[in-house]
Structures are given as structure tokens and as C-alpha cells.
Length: 236
Ligand SMILES: *Cc1c(COP(=O)(O)O)cnc(C)c1O
Image (tube, rainbow, N blue to C red; front, side, top):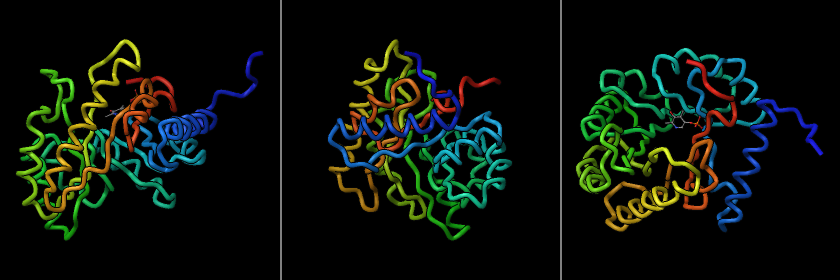
């Protein structure tokens, strides 16, 4: 029989939160080990509002300008903002103190600029390093074989706190084909963790999107970034 449950942002949020919970449980991971980051690029305020009322607590934005217009609208809501898009060095100054976590640090130079600006503001900025896990020529991120050295170079930056890794695997025909990439990111994180760099944590793995987040959770994701499955297809 066809489901009578209406397809709304609210029902999608509830269903995704339930799927996240059950994927974590199936993988023998504690409830709460995986957090949902709703990818809200191009999404209208009213739709984001519906999502927040349905239980979204972390919103991920890709563009600084767009984020800065949305954030003030939600100052009275208990939500965190994460930056998940490519960050230009000249925009760093305007993101310090605004985002709880930057997922997408893709060069040592960017980390240095974050360190400098966070230092000026008297803050420490939590970041993840983005890894080009499929070694794709046109994609942002550190090559897998560069990450260890990059982390080593960044340990001197006292206003940047490295919390883990992020990746966007190459497009795959189905979710399970993305599994080797997720596994590789986890192995990379474990390898770096074993080096015991001072003040470097490797506890966060930001991986998995609308089409493959359950597989990513099975492979150890702690943050899944989901847009389309919550808000529908993006326009523009
Ligand atoms: C848009 C976006 C997502 C979400 O993608 P969907 O396929 O819509 O779930 C995740 N991560 C990043 C970096 C994005 O830009």
C-alpha cells in the first residue's frame, strides 16, 4: 500500500535522522557518533526554517556571502554553522568567529591565513583538511600522499585546530562503489592519528552525501553532509 505520509522537509529530516541512527547502530557505533550537516546552499530561508523546526542543528554553507546573509536570520535558534565549500584566502577574515567548523581546508597557505586571522581575533578555529581522495586532477583538496606532510606543517599554527578529514569521492554509479574511498579516508586518518602530532585530533570524518551517507557511516563517518535528500533538487 502506498504510504500516506506526506513528502515534506519535515518528514525527510525525520526519515534521514532515523536512517543515520540505524546505519550507526548496524555498524555497532554509538548513537550520537554521527551528526547531520544539512547542506543549505541555494536553499531559501523558509525551507531552512522548516528543516530547523524539524530538528536540523548543523547547517553547512558553501559560499561566504550567501552564508553571511542567512546566519543573522537564525541567531535565536540553537544551530551551528559549518563552512563546506571552497574558501578563498581573501575571504578568510570574514569567516573567523562565524563558523564552528571549516570542513574544506585544502592548502597549507589557507591554513596559515586562517591561523593569522584567528590569532588577530583572539580565537582558535576548528578545521578539517579536505582530501582529494580519488586523486582527481580537477578537484580541490590535498592528495592522499600529501596529507601527512601538510598536517606536520600545520602543527606550528597555534590558532588552528585540526579535528579530522573531509572528502568528496568521485561520482560513482551506486553508493557501494564509494565505499573504498570512504575506507581510504578513514585509513588516512588512522595513519595520521598514529603519528601523535601535538594538538592534532583525527576524530572527525566528514564524508557521505545524499546518495551514499549510509555507506559512509558504515565506514566511520562522523559528519554526513546532506542537501538534496532534505531540500530537493537545487536550482541555480
Ligand atoms: C552540496 C554539497 C553537499 C550535499 O550534496 P547532496 O548531494 O545534495 O546531498 C555535500 N557536501 C558539499 C561540499 C556540498 O557542496
